[in-house]
Image (spheres, rainbow, N blue to C red):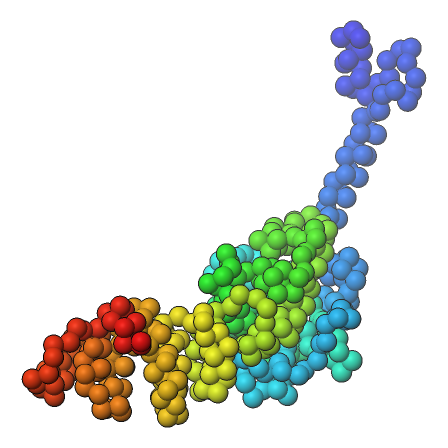
Length: 405
């Protein structure tokens, strides 16, 4: 091609000897450029209607609402029985349980972080879950979304979440204060299942993330799941380009989270009642019952896991026996703990043998396990009682074994 031909092409002319279809004119190229620019402008102007069509929802006052119904697997009974069988909510069996999970514009939870998607669910009378997802197509509808959320949840619900105590709840409350949404969610009772799961399994699992819990307790493994950490990028893609593909993946991820919350809530009361085949921390579970004032439930859990109890739980179980006047069981447990090296159990044995059994000789064997402030006085008193008697060796795990013979 000659220089003249190139100049003609740049001017939009057709070089001699060529067909008209081989080189586009300048006008053609300008028209195509305008078309691409128009398409780009359209992509950069996302609308609630477009997002609703992409997610299969409807627009209500500028907010996209997606309604779904989830049915449990046939092998998994899914009713209200025992949903209050946890230390935090015992006695709330007839509660209006609402499961909540949020997707946010950032993961830090700071002032600039907003909620662009909220998934909530409650059980229906037919054994399924009614799920509602509230999605923002833009920031202007945030006020309306928060008000719709409060209305859907209602004033008497118990809100169930996973890390909602530290993240979802405070973030929603902050956004509601910003928009002066009243009533808000602050007065509702909360159940954060992350603490329920962590208490029972952190000694046995590498982590207690929601997907770890659903895999180990429900046998469910997600396929092609979009990580929650990518949700902010999906939201920004929608705002910049009107691309809802990743946002649809976020909605599926959010739906899985909400359903998993409901299924875990169904699974955990049996574990906290001692009916489980998994490795759990019975000591921590029993302590939760004990601290909540349910000694009977703590007793059942601790006795079921007696061979595996840690020192703290063992001492608490022995204290329950002592308060009930079951001294033989208390003594047996103290001896077991003292043999394992528990100085606190040795001190309890010293008190028991001195004041209940009236055997200062045996009491002296275990007195050295008492705290410094008590040990000196106790040793002196017991030695006075045994004045003139044989010298005795003080407490040690070996001496406990000999005392048990």
